Amino acid sequence: MAQLSVKICGVGFSNPVIAASGTFGFGREYNELYDISAAGGVSTKGLTLEPRPGNPVPRIAEGKSVILNAVGLMNPGVEEFIKNDLSWLKSKTTVIANVAGRTLEDYQGICARLDGIVDMIELNISCPNVRAGGMALGIKPQNVEEVTRLCKAALKTTPLIVKLSPNVESIAVNARAAESGGADCISLINTLTGMVVDIERRRPVIANNTGGVSGAGIMPIALRMVYEAAHAVDIPVIGMGGITCGKDAIAFMMAGARAVQVGTANFTDSYAIPRIVRETDEWLDAHGIADVNDIVDTLKLN
Ligand SMILES: Cc1cc2nc3c(=O)[nH]c(=O)nc-3n(C[C@H](O)[C@H](O)[C@H](O)COP(=O)(O)O)c2cc1C
Image 1 (spheres, rainbow, N blue to C red):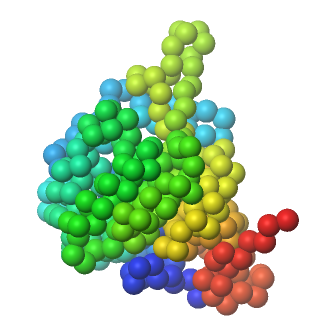
Image 2 (image 1 turned 45 degrees about the horizontal axis):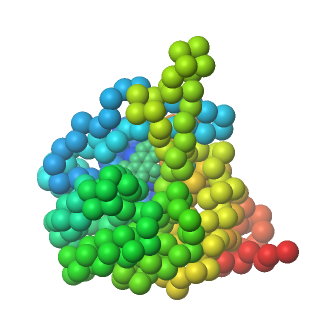
């Protein structure tokens, strides 16, 4: 058994494998299958100030080695989460609250509400935003820096993770923009924008036409971006995108991630997270590595 616990911005995780936002709800359904304390942490479904019904259906489509989703920010709202789920989830594992909004004031308001009662806050800046003219806030570096600065100002104690969008000109520039705005940590990647077409109907499969691409097929892109971002900033990085097994998690950590998140893999294998924790441990044991932290940022370029 290797030592698997990691610490990010002073927050402890029992292991580096965290459930990714939007693929694990608030953990209740998975906890019926296994004790979700097995996860190093859970990033919640994206929370908004008010409840949101999400986008029209169909909102999920399958591609090759990937899925496409346009679920939208379907969630019960931050107050319902605090009332019904937060203390239960905290009794199980480390809680990262993933937050979203349409306006900068929304983001600030949710951060202020969650400050001091969750372990970390993760900003989803990939959703369409009023300030950016309907475009995602996460695209232009100046918007990334601004939303980060405003949210950081609303927080007294809880460390702030900014989750970067991959649909950008330079991931390194946006990583540095988050760091300049005061982010304590960055996570990446969110989904890539894509389309799946039903050629018989000559229409996109999902009602929203386009959606976010995730799953095994995006992993090489995610790994490259995690490497570039981790080498552009001094703050810790959480890596994700297509992880399906322990060896994938190890690759992200070698590229510079201090922990990883697992999303779409939960849909193809409900037990993906405990399996990936076990496989990571087995790989470390097989290579005589006593502490998972020792593999972080050990990748050597050719
Ligand atoms: C159905 C679905 C819903 C998602 N919802 C959110 C969300 O609410 N907030 C967020 O930051 N990311 C969300 N994501 C993105 C994932 O957290 C993750 O960044 C992405 O899927 C890449 O990881 P993966 O390939 O392991 O799934 C969602 C992804 C999927 C597939």
